[in-house]
Length: 199
Image 1 (cartoon, rainbow, N blue to C red):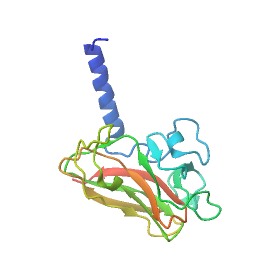
Image 2 (spheres, helix red, strand yellow):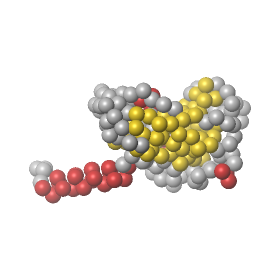
Image 3 (cartoon, rainbow, N blue to C red):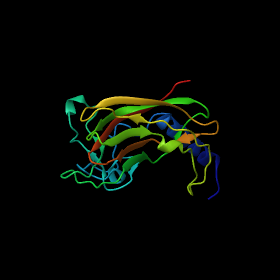
Image 4 (cartoon, one colour):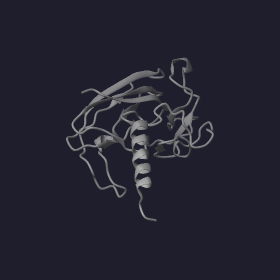
């Protein structure tokens, strides 16, 4: 099929809509959009729109502790290895599937609500270790940059945390990641993620 002016306009309209939808906000950062009706303990990769998990321990849930403190109904949970939690003893993460477009050299604030279930674990948000936009084969299209981390500091309490990061002079796209590493004993929960430009 030959490209036409109509198809070109439709493509440009789609691109503009995608930029307007994501902008510098985290796609589905409140974990309330699903690809099919959500199931308690369902895999992030199967249910949470625009997200994928590193393992079967990355799930969606409504069973987070202290529900009166949280932001929304559904959360992303990374299940730990302690008895009764259903996870294993390895580090886990959930990461956005679309790239979030950013302006090269600009500073951004990544923020969200985190809950750490065990003091021996590290629970945090980051920009996937500062990896910039790549093509479908993993080849860099933009620059990498020194990343920062927004860490949970307490245990079994929802905390609003943030980190300010300046992206590289050639960085045009980033991904957001929710991580639990360290001893990997407890569950980690995430909700209400946002990115804001600072300059």
